Image (cartoon, rainbow, N blue to C red):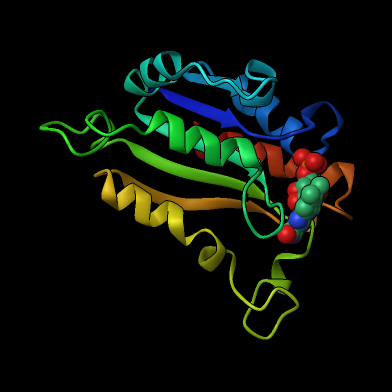
Length: 171
Ligand SMILES: Cc1cc2nc3c(=O)[nH]c(=O)nc-3n(C[C@H](O)[C@H](O)[C@H](O)COP(=O)(O)O)c2cc1C
């Protein structure tokens, strides 16, 4: 199974969690890692290149840090630009149909804060609900998200262990 990990981090070169996860994922033979902010520093997305990458992938992983209970802005733009009418939906065929979609999301806050009675007030799944809806709309299979909580306080050892779990899950 071919996997592409799209890393959408505005400052990946200062990242602790996402950089470690991406490096570990990229060490697997069938995993291709694309750093979208490095590819498109001016925000001008090469739609044809992204669509070709997606067509050649069985499993699509969108990896990003939670920002204001949402995604970094380039991911929203990527969705708007790349998922075009007649390609991913609205035509006779749907380009992403039957492919897997998985999110890998890091949280600054503890995962325990993401509960109805926690500081975030809602679960991580609730904040990420639009991706599950998009996945269904495009005929994809939505895989349980890979969540890394507590990024603000996580130790180097915990990052190594989490990156190993990520690699095992993607292998
Ligand atoms: C602009 C901005 C907004 C953020 N918003 C949230 C948030 O809503 N919830 C949260 O848990 N963490 C939030 N964070 C913290 C990031 O999620 C955290 O720094 C990141 O997951 C750490 O991953 P990294 O080591 O790969 O940078 C925010 C960070 C930034 C810079």
